[in-house]
Every structure is written in C-alpha cells, then in structure tokens.
Image (cartoon, rainbow, N blue to C red; front, side, top):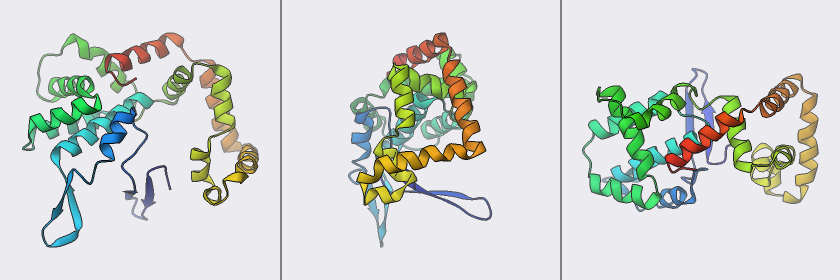
Length: 238
C-alpha cells in the first residue's frame, strides 16, 4: 500500500495500481483541491451503477498536475509529453473548460510550455527558445529523474543540511505508517519503529543504498540545483 494506491504485480508481469484517493502528493495544494472534486467531474454511465467516467477537462487537469508533480520531484519521461500531444490532437474537447480548471489550479504556464514542447517534438513546430531548458531537463532526467537530481531537489527544498538528515533519519508518521501498518492503530509506537527501521542498516543492500544517498548529498552540484529551482519557478510549479 502506498500513500494513495495499492500496487499489484501479476506472475505475467502486469502492474496494476488501484487508487483509493485522488489526493496525491501534488506540487501544490491547489492541484489537490481540484483533484478532490473528482466526483463532481465524473458522470454515471447508463445501466451501470458502479461505473463513472471522468469528464475530459478534469482528466486533462489530472494529466498536467501529475506531470507537474513528477517534474517537481526530479523528472518526467518523454511519454507524458506524447500523451499531452495525443490529448490535444486525438480527442474532442472544450478548451474553455480545460482552461478554467488550469487557471484555478495555477497550471496555465506549465501546460503552455509542455504543449509547446509536444508540438515541437510531434508536430514539427519550430522550437521556441523558452523550451530548450525544459527539453534538456526531460531528456537528461530518465523516466522519473535520477537519484542525484532527486537528492538535489529535496535538499534545495529543505534548504538546511541538518534538517535534511534529520527528516531522513526520523521519517514522519505519514511515511512510517505505510511501511509499518500497525502504526495506524498504535501511532504511539512511532519511536519504536524508528529504531526497527534503523536496524535495517544491517542489510547490506540497505547499507549500500544509504551510502549512495549520502554520497549524492555530499556531491550535490549547487549550480545544477539552482538551475532546477529556476526552471521550476519559470514553470510556476515551485
């Protein structure tokens, strides 16, 4: 169980995510607020009381907000830019409704820039100079960002090295309860499970991952981190 979904993996390697909430860890509370209105933006299907279909404008907002979340957390692959192109070329939609939700959620600039990039890549439109930095960020970030970039962003957001390590050592209850579900019934045991978690360092694989993260934190390129923050501010998602 994750913070907003349950993942299942079949023997044939299919991966299915069942989301039990639309309130993911979006880049802004404004995004979350709109996603929580999912029932207002879905329509019941005739002759099927268990099925509802999400309205186009809300589904489009979800796509853009989901992209913004991953951008802000370190990276987002090429596929979502292709999805943006498809959603703007292969569906019938009401632009005024899409624009109203994007305006309400503060995603107009981010949507505009990612649309420009999708047109440059998949419609052969001339590349605007403003999208070169965005293009570089996507191509050099892998599917969801590199480990180095993820550490750089987290450290930049916290802006305090001691606080960064404190949070990594003493994980908040919201994270710990997912790893140790018993905490949902007995949150008072949180300090006990901090200690349980620390004992995981006896596992060589866990030690190796921890050493890599510490090394990444020590070697964060402040110029790169500052550049990422600048891009996020230009996209208005920081």
